[in-house]
Each structure stands twice: as structure tokens, then as C-alpha cells.
Image (cartoon, one colour):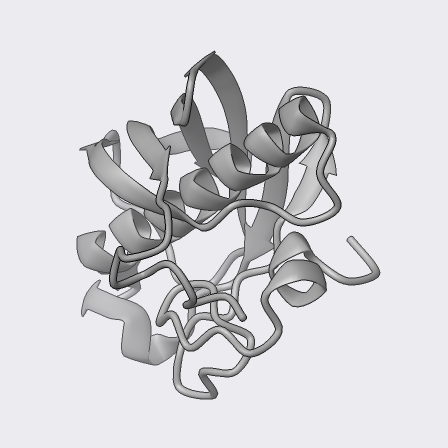
Length: 155
């Protein structure tokens, strides 16, 4: 996955812990386009552990949340034929932890758009390690307008 992820393309000054390129202490995920969604890889580090050798569930949730949010933003941008994605926020999301997730391997996360209704996007997420499903999730992400506290967060 070479090149700029959508986060670096559209929000290089974002400080989000999960996906902000400008947050040097964050996860700095990079998501790339696939048909009807995005894909990303992430290799956890020792400080992401919940217990020896396994990644913390909150880190997993952050990876899925941010990746899903960007999936929604890109989907709305494409649907509207815009050059930039709208600012989207998480309305709700859920994560199902299927098995302990190791820190010593690359994680692969894919997302798929389930539906778009106005400014709302439903997304499904899948996280795998070594070919095994470790977590799944789904989320509802909403484009916000001027006046919302997050509206200018990507600029």
C-alpha cells in the first residue's frame, strides 16, 4: 500500500488520535480505496497491548472507528462528485472482538459501504490477522455542517 492514504490526501493537518497525520503520538492509520470501501494495514506495537502479546480492545475500536469514518467520507464525496470529502463524525459504532489479536503481526482492515441515506452512511468493517478474523464492526457515520464542533477539524 504505497502512496498517500486518504487521510494524508484530504486532512494532512488532522490531529485525530486514530487517523490524524499531524498527531505524532497517534496511530496515524492510512486507508486506501477499494471497490465500495477502503483497506488498510496496521502493525501494533508493544505499547498497544492489553496483556502480553495481544492488542488492547480500545485500540481495535479506534482503528475500526477511524477507518469506517473515512469510508463514509470518501463514499459521500464520490456520490456527490466532490473534490474533497465532507467532514464526517461517528454517530454510532459497535465492535465484536472475535479472538485475541496479536501485536506481532500486521493487521488488515477492510470496510464496505452498506448504505447511504442523505448525509448518513452505514459501514461494515472486518479486521484480520494472519488470515483469521479477529474483529468485526459496523458504524453509522454522518456528515456535519458549519456550526458543528468538528466541522473544520480536517482543514
